[in-house]
Length: 232
Ligand SMILES: C[S@@+](CC[C@H](N)C(=O)[O-])C[C@H]1O[C@@H](n2cnc3c(N)ncnc32)[C@H](O)[C@@H]1O
Image (cartoon, rainbow, N blue to C red; front, side):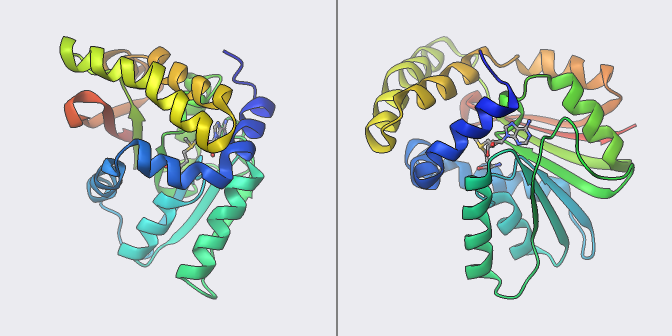
């Protein structure tokens, strides 16, 4: 799969006008609960400086700022996704600051140990080098800082797995393509979920990149997985 930053940035630029609607429609809004759980587990405190990697249209950033008074920095490859994030932020917190910048999570323009907490929701599977991203995330997080990773996964139970794969290969590209006019983008999204490493493999990778897994939680029958990890 071509996961070059240029291609991924263009793909999300293209689907950005429909992203929020389709995201909630296709996940039947269960993602709202997953996001809330990730934030609860991250235990963000007042005044913390938070990094939202692959911030997209800013749902995690907005949810974070709605629950606690902290500083949030978002980074994403896609200019159009970031534009939507800024519009949502301005409507919700007029005059508030959201530092959103266009850039690659594998080479972030931040000093070492800059952030108290960080998160990446549904972004890591689009990255060309997951290990490279983990090294970069480790560098910018303060020692013992925590990061939340939310990502889709393929359920382990045979029947649920079969139904889910049917949904991924048929329903998702069909509805996504119909609504956005870009069936190829939704085929890519479906394939990127199917090919993403299992929770066990991700946990091994986390150890290799000097993170301790604090919590590893399958969500909604294993359709999604939440990892809370600590920089060692
Ligand atoms: C599926 S969206 C998720 C957006 C948001 N985090 C959410 O929870 O809705 C994936 C986002 O990851 C971004 N992305 C993918 N690879 C990236 C990279 N290497 N660096 C920065 N952003 C990246 C894409 O541009 C896209 O906006």
